[in-house]
Length: 261
Image 1 (cartoon, one colour):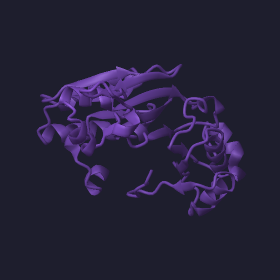
Image 2 (cartoon, helix red, strand yellow; image 1 turned 30 degrees about the horizontal axis):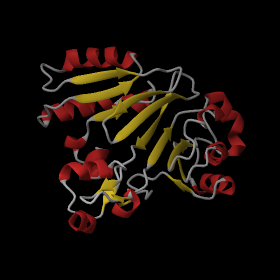
Image 3 (cartoon, one colour; image 1 turned 180 degrees about the horizontal axis):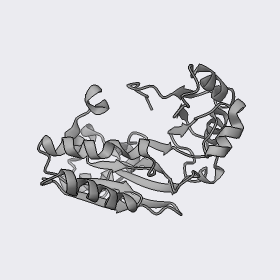
């Protein structure tokens, strides 16, 4: 329903990452799979999750589905250490352990460095062939017909800087994730409680807004998004203010909000 509400194209949904097997993180998955099937999906769907999820979904689907017209490919997560779980040539995705009541993973999404951009006027001026363009974009110099070496820096410009995004929820305050998410462009970190409810946060293996901001500061993140607020708070502005005292470049997660990185 949320994907439809914000006009996300369901046909572009090919990879689903599940942090842990608490109901609020998985109950919507069978309905989503059912909707995709009714809409005529035929392409593979990849799900990255705790190994137990495969059996849970298989039992559900064996009861409710006569036939599924696409293949679900399960990728069991390593819940004890960080590892590369996806690489499509453009983006790498890493999982890493968080600290919660049950085994839980966070995810780090990193754009891979792009090739250098070659200047069009340089192609015409030096009569550079298509084969040579490929090597130049990879960073090599060019030698013209007279044997003159043209430095790569003259022929190309830097590609756009890569972007990165880390998702950390649900988790208690856990500094062991800092080296993994170091220098991340955008960090989402749960902030279930305020610092005044710190005891409750510790008891339930969740974080406070101050905890989230401290992690962002330690990781030298560029921007922090806080969310997963407890229903006990009628207003979330105090949580945002609490985080900003430690990490000023903080925003709160609001449904439908677009974050510019």
